[in-house]
Image (cartoon, rainbow, N blue to C red; front, side):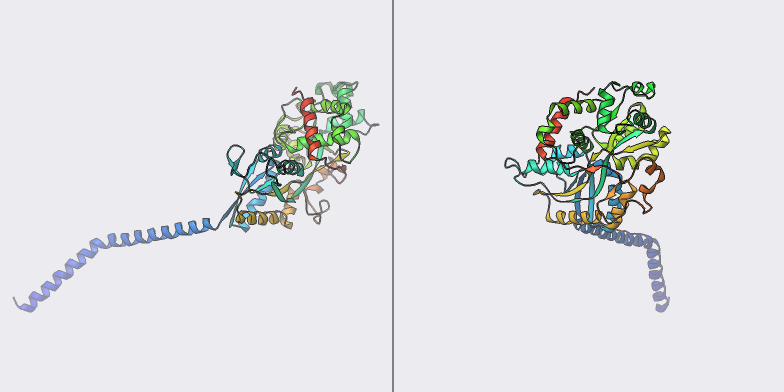
Length: 417
């Protein structure tokens, strides 16, 4: 065979071998390349995630649950605007959180059953802030205020909510004495009617007058009720004194109202409102709670029980002002403090303050109109039910020691019956 032909056949054989090899191996080679690329992409994604997490500041907010709906809506918007800050919400009754924070020490990074110390604290009212700081400034505790840089977020006055048919009967009985007031409710409970709707001119089937409120040791609205009882008993807007808080006549007045209950006292205003919706007038006649909760749940209440519910404001009233405070504790890092300030400012921005109106809160920003701006406060049904500007004269909060005296008087007068 000629040499050239041998070379040609050799080359052809090699070509065939190469073609067969790549034909068989190519898919495996491509798969290996794809696997390598995928692995690199995964590594890059993991690195990016780790970098992002390293650049995110986590802040924990311990808050009163009555503003749950508004705060969650605000946080959802905040996370879009500030992905570099992650907000963890921890709902808790305001008095319960105050009691837990009052036990905080500098040498521990946890409180209340091994929970992390919150970055921010937002109880329902400045009452809890005053109580907490009056304790932690003691030399035997932290020797400083634990809740600092507090800013009011939203406002809501206390309201007495009463079913329309009960309101009509009560107002007829007390038409010459001011209608529905805390003093008149106490009189109806302890006077000739002895708490009987039948003797008061109402439907005998309604049974006894039933008052709903929250546990003052666990919930802010409960302690606000206790304070309002004192000022309305003494018929004054100025601070109630310790001597007035412990006077026998006031203790009797407190016992009359605090024991006119048919249900166990609940630990938060949100839970109370849900129970009112579920049980209705069979279990509650007068409910002392925040205006905002009444507004937020008004349609549901009316739809479920087929009658409206009236809003009546005490003559001397007080606001729940929802302060948002930074917790001054060694476990809170400088980055967390700065993130907390960013969150505070966001909640006080015009858009988020206006959003509060949707949930029945009055903005802390006084430049934002409450009425006449096409908000929920302009609802004709709510206005017909009594929601308006006439919310009673704002009373001056007593000092921490007097608040503790009022709590003691309530505890001793409440029988739990």
